[in-house]
Image (cartoon, rainbow, N blue to C red; front, side, top):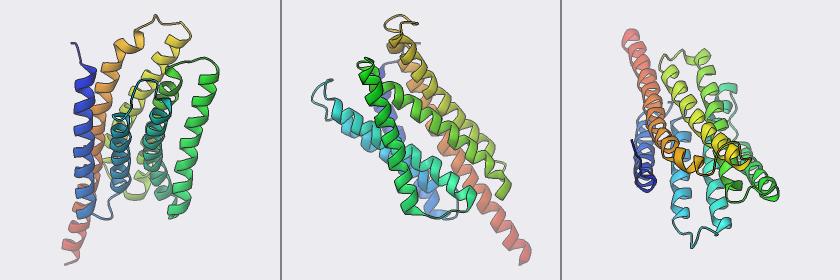
Length: 230
């Protein structure tokens, strides 16, 4: 099956915005639902970063590309950190914001190092995909650990969706890296890119669905308790 990258980017943009809307609407109805507000922020920042990339004047416009990537990284960092803070009972918005900025700066540092080592055009793509992958896996871990607090059964599909999202991005980073060090032939990254991008889009939808399931399960339990008490 041949996948067109430009079409996938268009579909990905639509899916990201729609998923953000679904997550926000669910959070609006269930304010105590875990992770939905952070996931909305992550998706909106991803959309903002993708929109910024549309304003590149050329492929050589590195500064704008890196800035857009940093915005997306910060969004996924916000998702992970909000889950981590919630699991530990922290409520520090300023600290969370500073930590997100720190993660984005770590990505920037990796970009600078790889560019100095001669990674060329892949200097931003490798740390970008790797960072998103690791943040996705870290979010999966925090989602799963949160089961000790609320025992939500729907945490499992949400966590697995984050694992899938993380693995897709790590695979993308690995293929890019192996191509740079000539383990894989030139063009391998371009050939596999449509498939990892497709997987990323699918798992964004599945993550959103998983988080909505968690919100509905939590709300259902609360209503059952209220009905029982009544």
